[in-house]
Length: 99
Image (cartoon, rainbow, N blue to C red; front, side, top):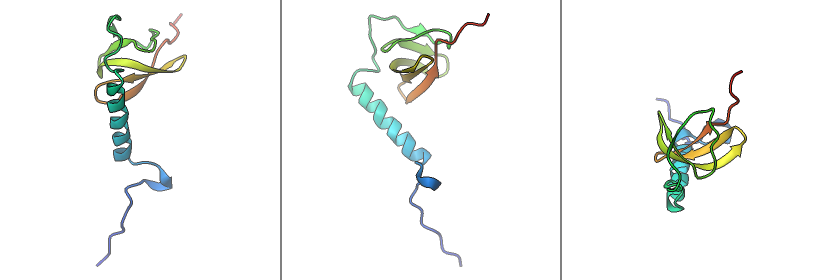
């Protein structure tokens, strides 16, 4: 009878497993909720998400698939981090309009 190899739960090459990454995201979202980032700036209107629209830190957005979220970080000129109730996601924004 073959013996089962014990695993540490980590994938090869020391990378984190999906479960570990999901747990980390839950911690980040919980921390952002504590900091009030998920409520956003209530003086700003909720804007529909579009990759062609430019967003700023604290903007409240409504994404067709992910729901309501708040811009929690500007990563670069075309990427933002948005805190949604279930997790944080990286979205594109401010894409140039087609000619």
